[in-house]
Length: 66
Image (cartoon, rainbow, N blue to C red; front, side, top):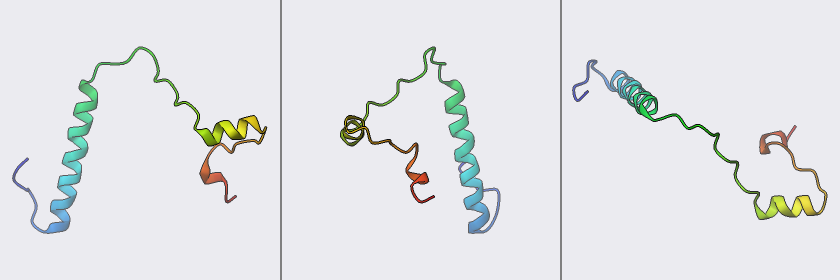
């Protein structure tokens, strides 16, 4: 992985990105599987305030503009 197969910065960059993706996939595949799903995060202070005031929370901040 130390030598680049292609000449030119754009092609070399693409090879580096693809190599990094492959390394990450290998790392993820070698991790043991977890039996229980990860627990959800506790609500923030703002979310708790919204719940106490009975103000509905949007599902995502991305939906605020629509």
